[in-house]
Amino acid sequence: MLACVISVVSCGDDGGAGTASAGGTAGESSGTATSGNTMGPTSAADTSAASQTASADSSATDTASTADTTAPTSGDTAATGSDATGSSGASASEGDSSSSGEGPPATHHLMNSDQTECGDPLWCFYNGNVDVPAGDPIEGQECFTSPVAPPFELIEMHYIVASTHTDLEAFELRIFERDGGAPTDLIASIDATSVEASPVEHYYAFDPPIVIDTQEFCVGFGAFEPGLASSIGMAVDTASAVPDVSYVRMEGAGDCDIPDWEDASMHIPEPAGNWCMDATIRELR
Image 1: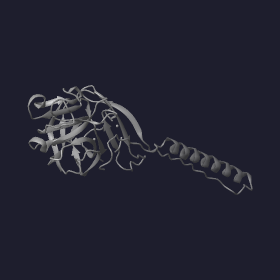
Image 2: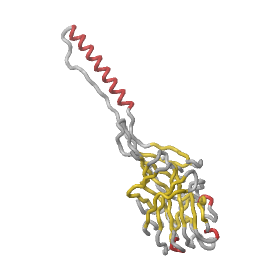
Image 3: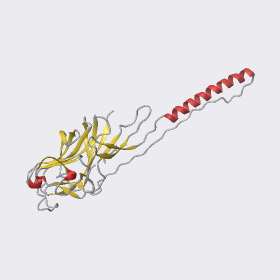
Image 4: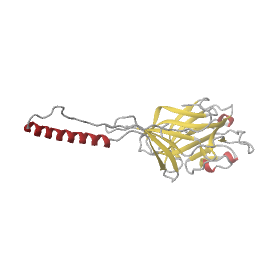
């Protein structure tokens, strides 16, 4: 098997198993305009003209000052969103904005759980021992609802692999559409290597980014070789059970026979939980 709250943040490859965090900084702008006359009047007519000039200068200063203080400032925002199925997740957005519309496109980090307990693999295993893989093809997906209207770009996926078998031959990172439930149509499939399948924490940057035309989408993996050649144990967060966002399907006998997408947060036998996966998207201009 293989291994990215809805999160609106920005989000790489290997590291130690764990969780991801995101943050940003906020900037601010200000400005004033001043004008004046350093020469004093020498007559009544000069005095009147100077008074009118000073009044006009003062009005211009007030106007410029008001425009500066009402201009938007750049910075990060955080919010909570909910998907079409009613489940919610934390997200964060990051990007600069200005009154002229300049600045980089905003990015949004989407995450369904805190990923605090990501040590156990969800895969087919022998005799009740989760550490002894039985192999068989497996596929998993973690789904999100974008906080911005499509199209947008998927630029990065974070995921944690809990365990693999040495016979693992190949696996894929796979992106799906969805519509209020399980994954539907495949958007993209990327052949990955044993490096991307190693049992650690991964940040995978999509180059080029994947353009997504639907509000809801899923990121995940697939391993389709027979037997132990498909033994990749993508981690699940056993401390979380957000429904209708995490899905698994397998080919095999007994508990490993899951021909249709099943909610991984209610998987039997355990472990069950949400996949330790999240995604970062970027708005299109």
